[in-house]
Amino acid sequence: MELQVTTLDGKADGSVTLKDDIFGLEVRQDILHRMVRYQQLKAMAGTHDVKHRSEGSRTGKKVESRSV
Image (cartoon, rainbow, N blue to C red; front, side, top):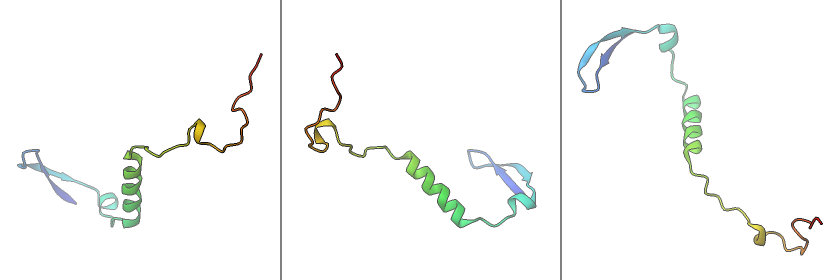
């Protein structure tokens, strides 16, 4: 498989030969979709709300025992 190499300016800068047994395969849409979703989810900011000490279940029990 012969591909044309272009520069960042968009000009042709030669060609490169790639092996067909590696780069000639069909694209697996399921794997591509899975990896795109994985990268999108990893990039999300973890802004989930968590319960703080005063928002927990109201048992009245001390959170930590007092050590003397």
